[in-house]
Length: 328
Length: 133
Image (tube, rainbow over all chains, first blue to last red):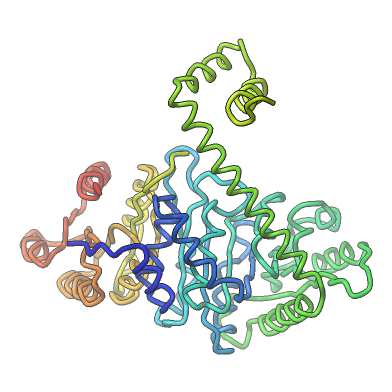
């Protein structure tokens, strides 16, 4: 029943904007199936032009609802939009409940919007391992903006900064004082801090704390100083929404800043370095485990560690010395 | 965590029916059985459901219908899937659906209908059996 298209044919259709091929290729990449690397090699030349917008913040802060509004703004500018939304996988069953689409319904009839839900599949850092590649696939599909929404993040899920050009961190009133805002980690990665649900009690106080924390930082001349934008993204009447236009303009300002400054060169360099590191790690692990399995040594090593006759660091050193760097 | 193919299931409630306790119980059970459940929520049109299923590249669509509109909605879903060349996506459902309608729905291409009182394990077993690929 199922028509089996070749990988190359699917990539060809992807480049023409075909949703089903995009969807299939994303699955292929997410599951690390055989053609994964070939797909990415074919896709790569068609990437690098889209604006990648990261959205992170705690669960329930309003990431998806705000994303829904931002999609509308980018669509009004005539841009095609791809959206990756990540939710956590269960550490027990490996299953997931991906519920972000519920808040992303304003554009369900719009062909210019492609939304994909992904489970984190045990990857730490707020994204899933495949997110990097999925963004590329969305770029190759012709989307001029790709929005990456992380799973509900705590203080340290900051990987989105390795992917996004512009990073929004959402907070809500009552989430802590300026001391919280000064901590390292997630608050540091924000190009724009969004104080969402700004109609709730305590919003003024939170705004003061956030601004206080930001102005305590020192910024060099010409450097982007993170902004705070207050938003209300749920309202009974559209005119009661707040800050969405201001946020859209601030995103545009950050983009303009990136284009002007040399920061973008560094961002690109860091990103490729990060990605190469990840791929090397994955591939080397595969090669080493495959090699060990052939010799039956893998089990032997693992058991020796369990029985405390050996430790993981010594095993890794021994394996690398014996198998990868012969003679050294 | 295990890698490789995970079953992806779109769960939705089509039409004007707000009783979502049952569908949430099913979604949770599938999650606990290791599946990735994309929960599309209430008041979905057949076209919205089919488009979401294609974009999310799901293996199956599970629909909960308690409004009596099953004889309208299921055929529409099947026909939209066919239009888009996506008939390989399994469609199953549940809810308050009279026995006399089951045969007709199945003959249209609905994989299985689980009526009220079904044990969630039955649904999981069915998906495990049917989605081996």
